[in-house]
Image 1 (cartoon, rainbow, N blue to C red):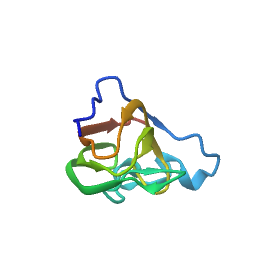
Image 2 (cartoon, rainbow, N blue to C red; image 1 turned 90 degrees about the vertical axis):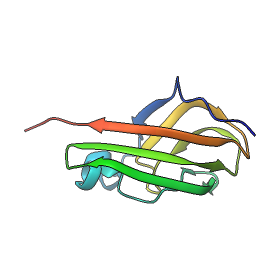
Image 3 (cartoon, rainbow, N blue to C red; image 1 turned 45 degrees about the vertical axis):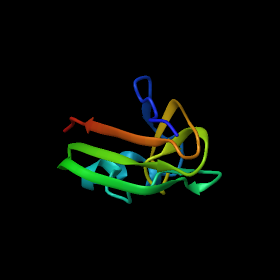
Image 4 (cartoon, one colour; image 1 turned 180 degrees about the horizontal axis):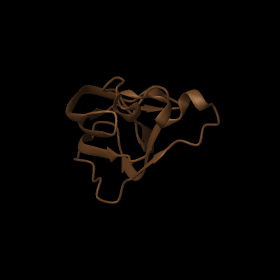
Length: 109
């Protein structure tokens, strides 16, 4: 069991073509308003003991802290069950713990 290193992690919108799964379809917290679980398309939920704390939440900015333990091994995951935000460029094993903050801010007219 180890603490997962997120120093090189990449956060990006998923490549789904369905407009209902795009980040900006969700007005509340830029699509980060779902559960605390982390997901993969192959395994579904891949965490236990998960905690999600909203530090800032508006229609243009979200700052959210995630923490818990992985129940599967892998090298990517999605922050929501709708597979809207993908986190990649990491490696984790079953039993590893995680703690990271996501900060997303958008501007527009």
